[in-house]
Image 1 (cartoon, helix red, strand yellow):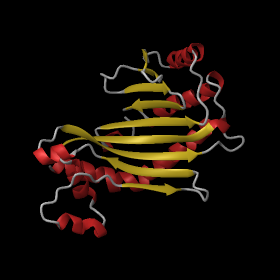
Image 2: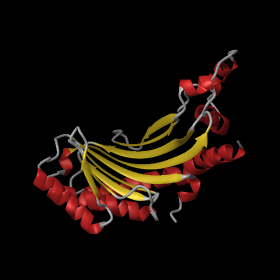
Image 3: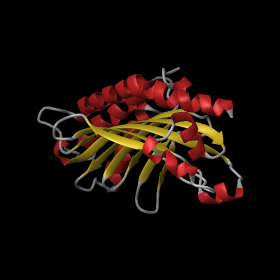
Image 4: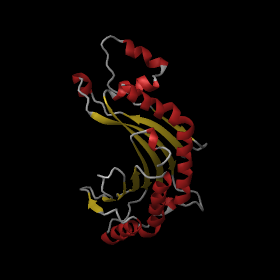
Length: 247
């Protein structure tokens, strides 16, 4: 069990690499790339193409933990839902980044942005926005809005992005995504939905000389883990879990 699995109902690690130029979309390149990925992970057997031309290879989702990877026109993605360890997920993403330069003609100068996302989902039936305020509070400058007679909270999704270097190329973002809409607030009928917390480390632009995509992924992983360990787990994730348990 990975060290973050107890913090939420579902946990996942996704890697996205956006490119300046279009990735190869010919049959030979796409199939060879996914065949090589499948050789490492034989249970990734479900291959299909979306209408807009995105290619997907994934495991069966019914088991509750699964791997997936996509090749889009200008984006390469990889994800692992509920991995046994964080290292398992990173190993998959590193393989994708090792294969892409040779099988998809991907250069390190062709990077628009590369990001690593650690996602935490909480299953909750109720007003997600109210829950976030109850668990995390609200900026004192905004509290008076809640005193207006007859008001109901329709949307509250805190987000913050910080730059980690002087030129702002390395950034980390924390955001909360709620899935309660105005109809549900109006009717008081709330289905069981997932409230999500995302910690995303992103590096913009082409990579520095002598830096590989795998090395950059390691740097992004360190940023995410440090952010979660020192700032997010105790201040965001555990308060949300306690608030849900108390409802």
